[in-house]
Amino acid sequence: MLSAIKQRLRLRFNRWIQTRLPEQSSVTLNQSRIFIVPTKQGLMLLVVSIGLLLLAINFEAPLNFALAFWLIAVLFVAVQLTYRNLSGVKLTALPGSLIEVGDSTIIPIQLESESKRPRGSLELIHPSWGVVHVHLDNGRGHCVLPVEAKARGPVKLPRFRIESRYPFGLVVAWSHIQLSGCGWAYPNGIEARRIVDSGQGSSEDDHLDDHLLIAGSEDFYQLQEYAPGDAIGRLHWPSFSKDLLVVKKFTNYQPADEWLDWSHYPHLSNEDKLKALAYLAERYEKEQRAFGLKLPHLELEVNQGFEQLQSVRQALAEFGYE
Image (cartoon, rainbow, N blue to C red; front, side, top):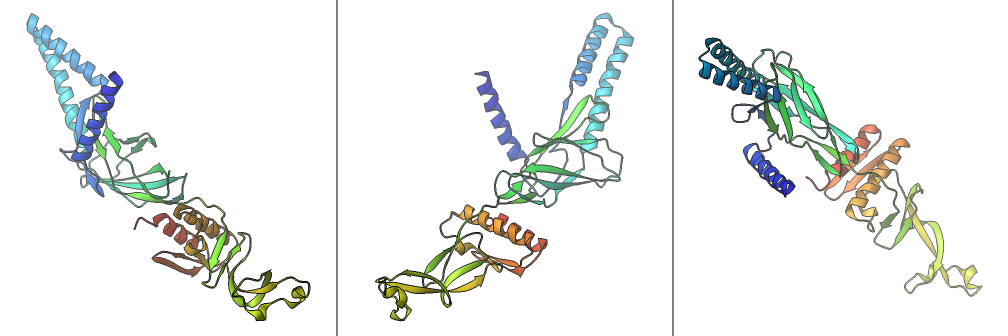
């Protein structure tokens, strides 16, 4: 019962935070975004201050009044200084790295402030990376946040907490940040058989072959049983003399190091097609072969090298998210 109540309150709080602090490309911390609560040490000091004040009222002791008001003044100053440590800081998420599904992308965060005054350590907190400390030097700071990619596509930066306890540790000023920056995750590669349909028939190609075979008239491929409609001129007469009715099949060879084509995998799901293309791209790059990419509504020219591999990976990661 108690856990259900806690979960319900947490969901309501998260909805309120999402409404109050929506996702943005950059966030500047100001009075409407910063929340302040006392720490355990601050609560203890507040209790002691109230106790001293009650004793001073009861016994009319001037020194107790002075000590109680001094402690309360310390708490007040701590609130002001801790708030100023966060106030005016602008956070911007830069584009993240391109990684494979299962790895962690690195999303750079830029912090800056128009004020050059010294600031204490700022903490960026989330279960994914724990606590990342940032120091602003002359109004500028920088850090990187790792985010695990669990699926292909954009790897978005989760909502995280930024807080400061500077300078006394008696209060904590904090805010929730949701930035729109993200990295990209390309699919894990898998081996798959390619099938090429030339419009006149189709043939299957093993994934270890260096060429695609399409129906043509240049090179002899194999003997196949006669089917109605096969040209009589292609009958294999030596086999006919042995009472076997077979015809000769010819092919044209298309270099496989030119195109990674979406249409070569009609038997696979869309995600498996992307995985198969990712596997071939990595294989061809290791073999130092040139290749291009053909996707629905996208075509990358034939090129060679690691930059071409990264371009293909980026296209595979962004497919369906344009």
